[in-house]
Length: 279
Picture 1 (cartoon, rainbow, N blue to C red):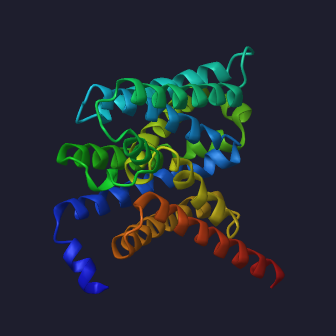
Picture 2 (picture 1 turned 180 degrees about the vertical axis):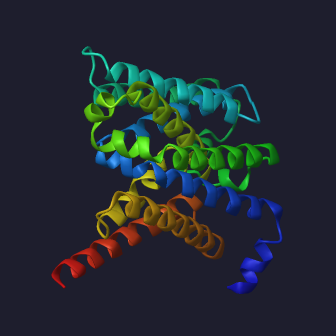
């Protein structure tokens, strides 16, 4: 086992994958707590489908470095969802559902109608489940992913108090002079960035798991907001590293393996939480 890991870590692309995986797992878990508490967890799933559409368009035009396009399109969708959710014409969950199914359908349609690849099913599977994308990152994509991940973490730490206030009481935050609209927009943009980064690790269909599972798991153990945020970040990184190592050793898909590890971690946290309550 150790010899296998040593062999694989001799290759730069494996080290790049581990670096990006750790950073993505870290920043993905931060806003998961807020999304769960605000009952807005489905936004990750919706935006990931928008990212799938952008990736499909990039694949049709054979753009190698597609991350900037996916980032711009996903951020625009996040802003659109936020704006529609603020109107009376369409509630936030309905807007997410509409954008989600539309993007997923159009993305698959474009890949079937215009793709020049002879293995459309394989391309779709890789895009949806992230089978090999984390292992095929270009150096510029690694740099961009690392910079964006670090930026997300720094911004979250800097605006932690504002995020805390918005999570529990928007009206009070607005009353004390907090620019609620600006910070909600900032959160939407950050979520879009996280979705794009997470796609490289687990694919578009599994990004919600990377964001939500660590928060749900640690909420079973802790009641403090700060404790949940910190512990979910630690758990997310541990699950990502464990999942990637297991994937290397066993030869399973990276994204699905990481989510499988997170499911096991959630079950352990549920059992531990019930045990602590009874004690």
